[in-house]
Image (tube, rainbow, N blue to C red):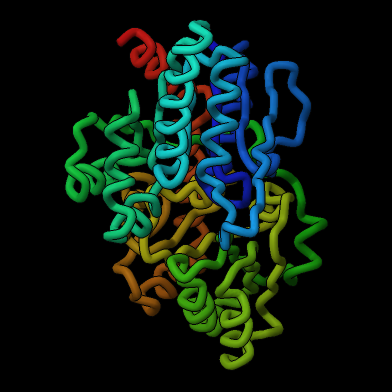
Length: 380
């Protein structure tokens, strides 16, 4: 198949999943064309089956803001026609599904002139905030619903997100659940203990949080919980990522007097190495459609303690491979972490179960579900 993929190329779960999906599809012999304003950050290695098309954003004095959605649609239509794409898989409803819909209309219009452009099928994958945050904005909800309904196939990364979509948008299209995935050969606990000495002493536990530091991630709750944890368990906290909440999070750590025990590492590519030296992941998100960071941690045998929100309970089975607690209950978040870090046999069991859970979400298990879905859509 000839497959186009459009995603946000920056740090974030949807971009990671889209890029890894494209790489896996290319590895299986499909030709994959990435269409975005910059190279996806996980697209580092060369592949003869992967082509990148950069969206050029024109600026005119008339426009206060460059019309990216239209530029994207034009590039999509160009690639659809000249590369004869079988389907275009877009990740996030806004603006990508709308741009894809416009691109298909451009493609159909071109076909009336050249009679050579075939119609490309459009598949939209919903990842979370396009439904739970952006989508509920009254000024955008109509566009989200149109993007869904004009797609030839729609997937969601969790049962929670599917139900949320059906409840809030009443789409005419059926939404199929295909969960996120992880390469468990790459994300596996490695012997990186020589790195650990740079962050913690031998008798200290090392906790980790990875996010884009947006308000929805509630990073300050993570810091407040850690302040309680380190009073009972000698420990350190690694904060990986960057974003609008970082400055406030740094200020809070100083305010709580735990600056020496908290390290802000910013954006990092050595995620596997950092997870491999960690004992526990803390998540305090307001909502999570799936929780890719949690899955990657579990693949590295790192149990996760998180708020019981969104699709996380589908991944983290409370008391089995990690713990979930009520949202905004910082004390409970800390208590569960202390319990886990203080009981070596309990910890060993949960770390093992976390890895076993991740194996069920391996790339080799999930990518064939996308291939099957593609074939169904193309056959319709």
